[in-house]
Length: 216
Ligand code: TMP
Image (cartoon, rainbow, N blue to C red; front, top):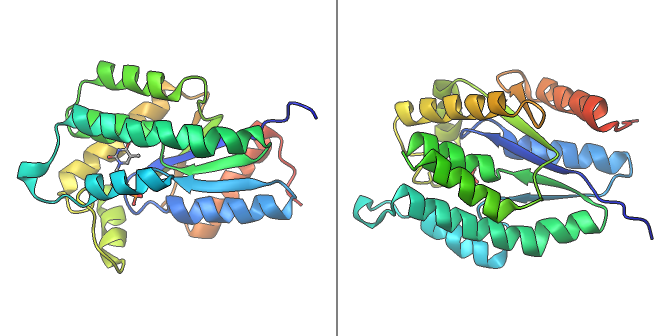
């Protein structure tokens, strides 16, 4: 057996930017090229993580909300479990991992938007993630007003963060752009206001150019 390791790709961006749709589309596209991939998400990529997800996303009583750094630790706990139980095993089997949100979300939400200490959150992310940095991160970018409209038009319950005011979502958008600017080797900003099909094509092009994938 060789040492074949799959690629690790994360998809980041605000609410309603189409990350989950693009994760699924790329998964299907890779399948057609006989590349095995696994889709997953944060928070809640493991059984234990799904309980953490419930606490983080559906505690709407402000008096019960955690401080930004405590939230970051809880997202970090979810990520550590996810890395150990799902991400690293899949990569080790040679699969690609397509992850809907990863450590950049903690920096954007708990750091830049909620005011947690940026240096501490970067240190926490480094501790949790270790060497398993994504090979490539797609930052899906849409104007906050537009992405919020998409979220509010969805069926189903809004999460705590979905329910925040527009200013919060503008901060999130700016945070992801900043994160991408700081790490251009890993991050690619994608205009996600374009039609779904076009966004998918752009993502495929980047996979061809950066990872040498040959789509049929
Ligand atoms: P989603 O699965 O619909 O994207 O919801 C996840 C929510 O959790 C979203 O509002 C972003 C938020 N989040 C953080 O605040 N910090 C994190 O580290 C992660 C992974 C998600």
